Image (tube, rainbow, N blue to C red):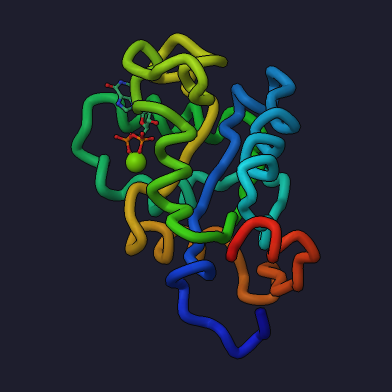
Length: 160
Ligand code: GDP
Ligand code: MG
């Protein structure tokens, strides 16, 4: 990979994943990072941050009419989150599969939400739901210079 390959498609597809405040409090950050590393995706952005109310309202703008919206913003600003960007083939769809369903009650064992939580309003992790959302969310949460292009030595063992 080189820095001129900026199209976010194919093996350069990117998604935004965040460990929510409950995931950080419950010491699940390492486990969640581990799942994406083990899968073979490439970490290109990572930071611990206290998200502002403004950022969170922008992030969840599509849900502003929902009855749980205020609770959601309060939950997401109740402590630090770990924001990350993962890169790889089909990463948007795969990350959603690895997360499980929005409601942990519908999430299969083996998924992050299926294994680590029980309540929809404490579901430990976020993942972008489409390539367009991923792009929007990455631009919202990360500055350009916080996303690192690096050559991974394992690439020939992950992709033919
Ligand atoms: P996601 O893309 O799977 O995270 O789900 P959504 O985009 O639909 O909702 C965003 C977040 O809002 C979810 O991850 C939950 O934390 C929360 N949420 C969604 N639906 C509900 C609900 O019915 N009740 C409550 N309390 N929270 C919800
Ligand atoms: Mg969503």
